[in-house]
Image: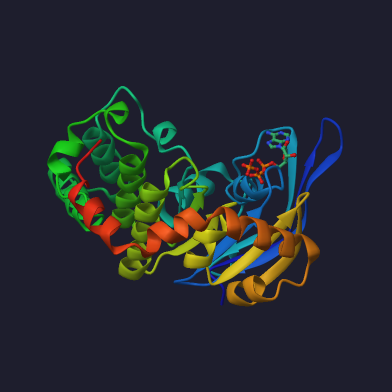
Length: 281
Ligand SMILES: Nc1ncnc2c1ncn2[C@@H]1O[C@H](COP(=O)(O)OP(=O)(O)OP(=O)(O)O)[C@@H](O)[C@H]1O
């Protein structure tokens, strides 16, 4: 049984009748990564928002989403809140927007873990530090004292992944989590996702226009254009022999564009430098 199954997911803008998503069908298996790729405006983010019922009121969402084989009641806001807290976590492109600028990272991690896992503040802190250590944040105690603006984008992204590691959701939806980062930080964050998956077995729905990153993480790929699926299937197969002209175009152009990322992923000396500079900022 698939962990997440999406059937005929469609979104219409009721203000002008425009169809934003067209009958999407896909599934996410346990302990695997499905990437959604496509050009800007192709509907990648909207797909995730529609699954989680985070769409604006003028958008009509139809179709069915199953979690562990059970239909998600998207209109039941209480049930959806529970699912978002327990089963499905989201990691956003700009980690800065996920944290409140007025509170330290430590306070926010404690609050999140206390509320969702019903643990004491002391335990929450210890769990946060342990997860951050696993994410190669060795000075976690210092990081916890910082405010979001005092940390780099890469460090904030790693802190979010650390929170996800403790929360152990069934699924993490990561919406362009590496887009705002430079190549070295991208490499780091991709490695943290791999680590997260190997430790927790969490399934990942990974949205990206960076096929270099996708090739590394995903076993399955959904290619979108104009709100519709143009190709869906095994990642290796799609990268090797894209059937659709648009996918071929994406593969040829995007792989070329992500060469700097590939180089960084393969350079040993960068790994050493990076481990040393895993201090905040
Ligand atoms: N709140 C909204 N109301 C109406 N239309 C929207 C809304 N948000 C997005 N859209 C439209 O839906 C379409 C898909 O947008 P979406 O943000 O899902 O694209 P995307 O593939 O994630 O792009 P990007 O890579 O730039 O983030 C676009 O045409 C966009 O203009």
